Amino acid sequence: MGRVNGMNGERKRWFVSALPLLGRGPAEVLAAAREWEWPGVELVMDGAEWQRPDGAAGEIRRALGGREIPVSLHAPVFEINLANPLYPELRLLAERQYMNALVTGAGIGAKHVVVHPGYGSRTYDRRRAQEYAREHLERLCTAAERLGVLLVIENAGIGPAALFDQEEFEKLIREFASPFCGAIVDVGHAFANGWNIPALLGALGDRVRAMHLHDNHGDADEHLPAGEGRVDWAAVRRAIDALPGPVHLVLEYREDTDLSVFRSHLARWAHGGI
Image (cartoon, rainbow, N blue to C red; front, side, top):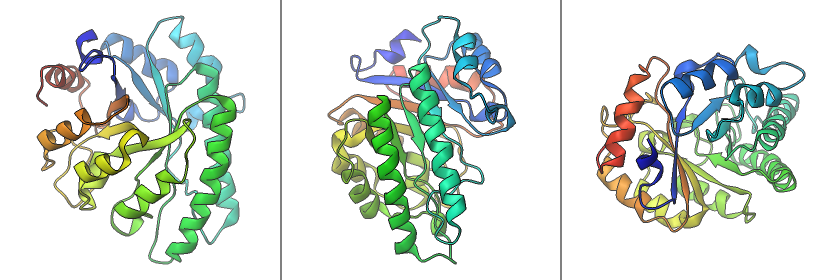
């Protein structure tokens, strides 16, 4: 798998999302990552295994056992909404969970920590929800800089659940100038929302620090393996190659994905295909 990491020099670092192992603890996920020789792993921090009062950093370090496998973290998603304008307690809970993820990330030397800016709803005042998202993200970015860990903000949600459209997301990311705060562009979410992905990457430039790669048919968040939906992967790849800075690339496939798929897809990417 070393050739995957070396594609176009050292500017691209590859990860496999642990979404197909959702709910498993970090030790089990890291064992699978070693077995399947993943070049890096993005741990998904949802589930009971991640809710221990003493945190997960110690368990992750023990599971790594000194091995040099790059690790990133995806902060909790389910039941979490950083922008909920109706219930401030839920916003504060989300911020606390994300702060914990940043602390864990700093404790294990995570390459990045993914957070969602929050979700929209037909019952929400959209502008108000966006302002709450900015308020909490500003505090999180300050914490990330203090801890020395990279925070990446994802374009989350499909349809009404997407709190920011393409132009608004670009503006949001540019508001945070810290080198410890950038964007993770989720290709599947962007495509399902009708966004112009090459234009988005071109507009954000070096603010794109990571990407979630998965496919769909343009109307739902299917998290299909690349090539099984309608995303124009040749255009996406050209746009990735044109990015001016280093980028972390994460294969984020659906929960029922056979783990053998990742090996073949990483090999295809290494040889110029998908």
